[in-house]
Image 1 (cartoon, rainbow, N blue to C red):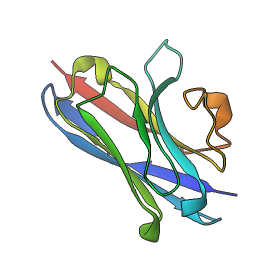
Image 2: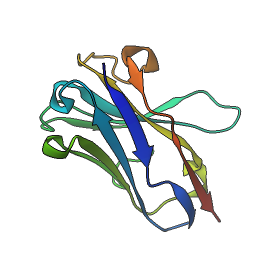
Image 3: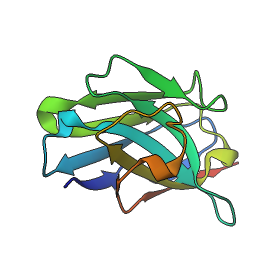
Image 4: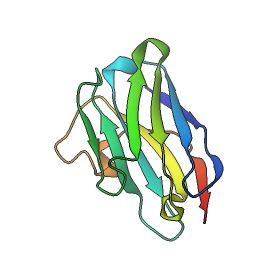
Length: 125
């Protein structure tokens, strides 16, 4: 069973950058597909990005493509979300999630069995 802990959130001005980290424990981190989701107040949880086990395949939601970069370091049980050129609409609680399987509908939160507690990202205009 995987346990995930996010960190790196905070308050930043529009145009700024943050790097989120997701540290995993338990079963071998490299055996999980890792995704990032976000949830703004009053909205549904939204897919942001996903990375396969070895990091060879990456996917992004269109609104963050070119600004966010997902990566992972399996040796250190950590996944990252580098967020550049942040916009006020990026404000949300960001969650990392894990699944041993990669599904074609990787953007559905129901495909992930393990979740972190979330980290708040606030972008001021």
